[in-house]
Image (tube, rainbow, N blue to C red):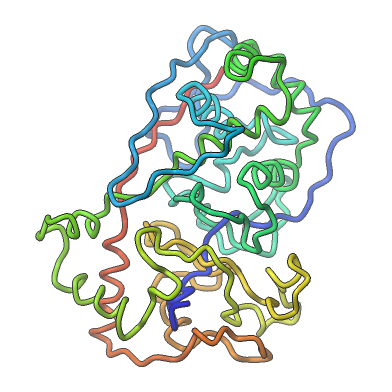
Amino acid sequence: MSPRLGALLVAVFFASAVTAGCEDKPPPPPPAPPAASASAAPSSSASPAPGGSGSKVAAPPLPATPLALPELKVPADNDLTPAKVALGKQLFFDKRLSKDFTSSCETCHAPEKGWSDGRPLTQKVGGATNTRHTPSLFNVGYGQAFGWDGRSDTLEKEVATQWTTQMGAELPTITASIAKIPGYATQLKAVFGGDPTPEMIVKAIAAYVRTIRSGGSPWDRFEKGEKRAVGEDAQRGFELFKGKASCTQCHAPPLYTDDAFHNLGVGFDKPDRDLGRGKVASDDKLNGAFKTPSLRSISTHPPYLHDGRALSLEQAVDVMLAGGIKEKNKGLDPKVKPIKLTSKEKDDLLAFLKSLEATVAVERPRLP
């Protein structure tokens, strides 16, 4: 892990939500959602498709792999197709998937907030506050284990977990409600060849989430020969990143993560310690270890670290430069060591991190 910023951010990946209660009876029909434009504010909901609930949204082609990113490895049982991704996008933005029709996947993963929610700690349906920060969805499809603690070994399992816990959904009940919407029923049958099931909805959402990628940043363009894409400060920052700061131990290009778990000591200074990976893996040696986030577009989704304590990228870097948190922590990752940078060097390092930001335009879908 990057000594210092090298786990820089165990900040950002599917937040682990406390299980919410589920209703025993089917929910009442939701009110018609208000219309919203593609440029609506983060809190706006997507608008219904023209022509009523029977309308079907046309499927645009799949997005190309962004510059500098590898090709996605897609599960054999959930291939990416334009129709499936378009369907998953609708479901991602639809509040009718939640227990009380007040939240959607977007509620915690808003495009304008770097696919996070801007809060130190995430909230679940009903307003209860959880114990972890909402991670970004950028490049999540490249992962091997999902959630801050890696509790899910597939993206599909993580989607189902968050749908149940974070959104409070009783999956059969919500699926039955969704199946009554002609536009969804038609698409689900066309994509999957059968009557709607929770598994179909999960697969469609996971397919869409896999297309949420960050690549083609100014730094990527610089490495491809566009020498004016970044300034000299970012170039010096990269030399620090791979050299003096040795951040590439845990944030190696091109994804800028090792997809592994490291103990930075974050949270060990609190009365109730979150054991993270150690609890999931039943391994005391991994107590306090959390997943290394990708640094791509990291500047777009503060706050940082799994408990959201770093309100800015600068604060997150400071935690790493200090060598993590040693207080009451016997398992601090040996890769995390204090390092002294001058004020100028720190500015250069931050300039490099910000050069990994890519512009990703998102148009909200029209809902059936």
